[in-house]
Image (cartoon, rainbow over all chains, first blue to last red; front, side, top):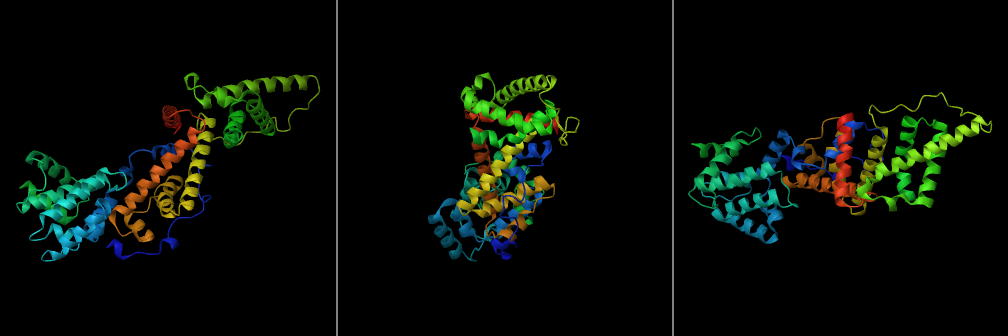
Length: 181
Length: 211
């Protein structure tokens, strides 16, 4: 689990010297790439990164993850809903596989995913946020709950799209797979 | 204005040596003379009307004109015996990069070097070296060293990131900062947002041809 292996960032990678690397000897190819950095931030993450990122999102404590995007008031609300559920919900993975997930909590996760995809200061990669968004909706539907106005056709399109992704976690893949049946 | 010329000194020199046949021993004299003439006498930046072409183009046109006059004057002096030939008249210029336009390459190098230097300074001033470290590790070093970028998992371990959005957030913040600073650097000689966009597009097209 990624967040269990933290080290002191001050001892970490990267130089603090601006003279460590520069473009003084860069050729046209490198210069072109440097200018292209200005486009599409999501393209900078590969499938392996997205796989790790999804696992991280599933296993990280739910309240701070969601609260950071939605606001401090929601952190407490998520914490309350998580701890009063039986069994208690520590993270998104618990919520996805919960026997009786609270609709309000699924709705908050859906909102968190939507904001993460759209808001400039909470930028989960768009595809990852989209997966979390539909995961929340599908888990709700599986339990007969409605947290979205999306119709069946839209859900099916999203499901077909998600099933093509190579980096889906097994837990999440099962959620999408069950929606195709 | 002096600062602006100083920044693009290398680009002007590269152009003169590779395209205008000015010898390496003469190039400093030509550039210094050109800068002085433009800066004090003509104020090139003030005349840089976007409708008449980019500042970079205007600068090259002025430099070409100045150099032609300078070379003509030099040849006349030599013919009259008032000046010996330059010591390195037959020397090979500094190895040129594999591109048709050395001036654009040097210009872009200057732009990007200033951008990353300022970005690093901002990160230090704002106590946001986490942004710099993600930018350097994930984008800058792989680009310059042509090595694979560290994975998301490595970044999280190295930087002690606890939430999935953090690394993504840092990288997005870093690229926005890079974007903003690069545009600021270009904005010091390009007059408008549209002109900045055109300048970036133009440089990219040049390197697409040369890459």
